[in-house]
Image 1: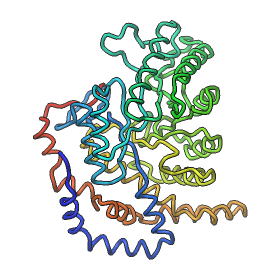
Image 2: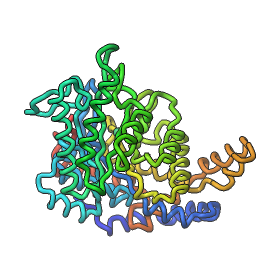
Image 3: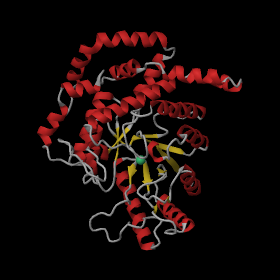
Image 4: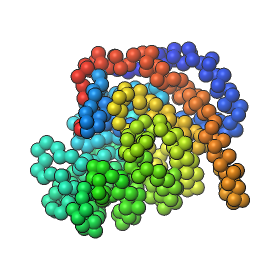
Amino acid sequence: MRINKKQIEEHNNKLLSKHQVTFEFAQNTIPNASAIIQQLIDFTIAIPSWALGTGGTRFGRFSGTGEPGNLEQKIEDIGLLHALNNSSGAISLHIPWDIPENPEAIKNLAAELHIQFDAVNSNTFQDQKNQPLSYKYGSLQHVDSAVRKQAIQHNIEVIKQGESLGSKAITVWLSDGSNFPGQLNFRRAFENTLEGLQEIYAALPPDWKIFIEYKAFEPNFYSMTVGDWGQSLLYANKLGPQAFTLVDLGHHLPNANIEQIVSLLLMEKKLGGFHFNDSKYGDDDLTVGSINPYQLFLIFNELVEGMNARNMNHTRDLAWMIDASHNIKDPLEDLLQSVEAIMISYAQALLVNQQGLAEAQTNNDVVGAQEILQHAFRNDVRALVAEARLRAGAALDPIQFYRDHQIRAQLTKERGSDTKATGL
Ligand SMILES: [Mn+2]
């Protein structure tokens, strides 16, 4: 299904007078409001193809209805999100769950819905049907070179799939590691992984990037072969200028200072991309901003400050993507909430008085520095984010629109109630 402009106009007209009251207040109290609105209009966050269906845990999965059953329908779902919020104009594909059978047709559909192809993701964390060798004991780290070769070939295949669609990056997340002390020679596992990554790197087109994603634990619980940002950075540095670290918010040990990690990776020109989610305990894959919005703001503050220091383009120079699991919410509603949370944090970071903050830091004015950050965080910027949507022809209140038009019920009518969108 598609949303037409007229439906959005009607929705906006109904909410306009109420919006104008809050927007005028925001405009009068936030000094650089119009510049911020333009930056919000330009910002886009990629939606992963696997997040459009109901996720689950290892204990079970409670299916939703009307979920997309193929890549075309996944792109259509992202088209719905993008029509509603103007900030979801990219898709991140997972191979082999979403192999495009007809790349030209897929490209045309995406172009029609103003959706670009973000980083493609490889998968060596599970065995596929008819796969000759198993990844039970790892992929690129494996003691058997034949398994490593199979994993390398898969990644090169993913690059080719991405090229056919116009992607410019591959994200490699490895579940490799060990569950028990003594299982693995750490050094050999690292060296094997590096050699594999070097072969994948050699297959990159010149205008491509490779993102090395790290994770502290799970599915391996004693060691992970790319376990933290230091290890990821080691690989990225050894690989070369097209290799970068990818930060997934949920992939740290509890209380890790992610904003500091982000700042230093930017300093080293090695931050490549970002996976948004939130967590209370581990890699919970909860909705970004639902547990710790202040942390999200602090991370965005470092991102904005660090990107500005290097004259980076906020939208294009880093890969922004949601990576979450919607276990009990409607995935589309959850994604609308996620994008909203990201836009709010980004807007708050844009209104930090950076010059004042630098002065406070120089003067060791600890109270002043905290005041500046918390002043920005405590601003209600929702009207700015809504105004950015309004100006771009999207909905003032995307979730309200989604509910008023009973989009899930319509999708269920189209696609049925026994649908499954994930490859797990
Ligand atoms: Mn991730």
